[in-house]
Length: 176
Image (cartoon, rainbow, N blue to C red; front, side, top):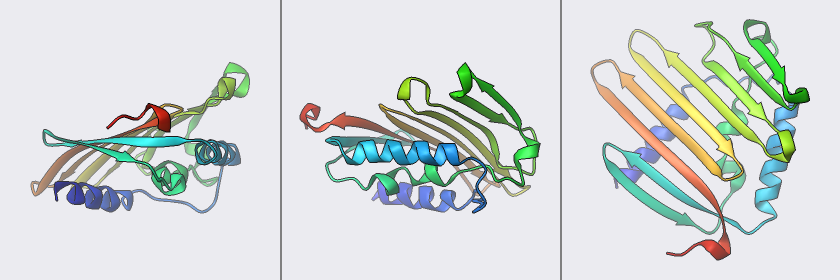
């Protein structure tokens, strides 16, 4: 039952960031598509570790909708209208990009991705706050799995710290 609550919180929190339909970086979209296609066309399974308030759970998933599983990553983007508010650093012959802002008006504070050597690696830091609440997300994705770390503080009413870690495992290496 506690993990239904965690799922609810993650779904609730996923509504706390702003998604712009106007895309600024088609490259990352194509990299995500390729990454998800690789997962779909392989025998990868998922082991999901969830922790909150000292409670830990492990779930083994054999059938995964990778588009849905990685939706939080794929829906985050910096819109063209926001791009001027970000310092952009391109390195490693263009295969690594980092977008960084200190602007309070944008919830995506840092978005870094690399596709050097054909391996996608993504780091995203998001902060959304008001006088009543603060939400902080840290997301990581690479060819071994993902990490979603969410901290929330809703003005003296609710405070939470959740971690969801997904490990991509070839099906023949999973032992229950």
